Length: 197
Image (cartoon, rainbow, N blue to C red; front, side, top):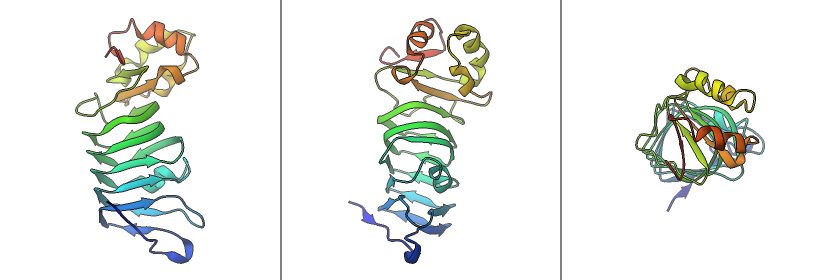
């Protein structure tokens, strides 16, 4: 069981921590008066309830390292880029965006990954990524030109993949071009479609 981390800036109902280590705590990132600040902190066996806005969440999580944590948004997250390290963490909820940093031995089996780019992960590795209708593209940046060519003018999904993108996961059913993606991805050897992966 986790113990609740109280605000250390109570007058603002705010968490503001630098270079701290947290273990066994539950942290609610929802904010009322001020955005929470965690910089260069480490979290071990914590529950991170991501009740912050999609625009604030990357800034709150950036520069930190999470190990054996539960990362659970209360609503759908459309984040730009989270620059943090995650090791042996479990993700829940709905996610879309980018993660730059180490993502090792993490479990996304209870997460709905709508469109997520793992910038520094070239392949799935020891992470658990599954779910009906997911397309998994390893070394996606290397395949950007091939994707653009294969999709032609039928879909512009390739624009979400940058040259430095490693692993790219998209929920085909949630994409506006789902029929095109199903047809084209089935013929691309570098794309795995779950549950056929």
